[in-house]
Length: 188
Image 1: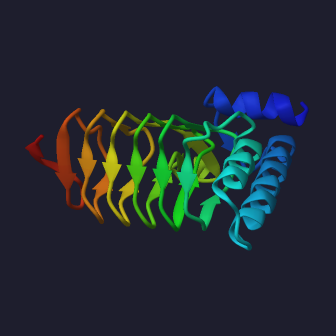
Image 2 (image 1 turned 90 degrees about the vertical axis):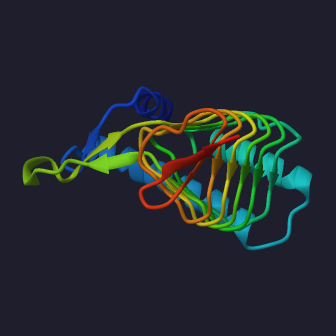
């Protein structure tokens, strides 16, 4: 399997065992590539246009010129992030994207937000297996600082996630969620 086949394998949501030396080796290769690109992003000043170009290399797909990111930004994979138009990422965001992260148009993501897309098996026999579940964020979503979005969550369009919330379940459109675990506190 070459690296492009591996990226496609990951985008299809396949689990990976730490025991599978070939897949694990390819995973490490992707991770090192993401580290190299994010190190470039995070260690010197870049114009908005340069950041768009760096993100395009990181994700392996074109990023719209309306995208804005204030570094630093962190990811462990990079090749399974899809970003819409007019998306804003504030400083310190951390994406575990192997399971897939899709961010809709007009979404704003606050400082130090973590989005995770992987879980490990719970029984000891599968603890070293990572199981991906995509995170989908609708359009015009606002995610407050230091929120954590867990694997498999869909956040509906126009929703607001309060700062510090831990989102473990889907968020309806036009809802405001807050708390740990996050719960709907009102409709917009």
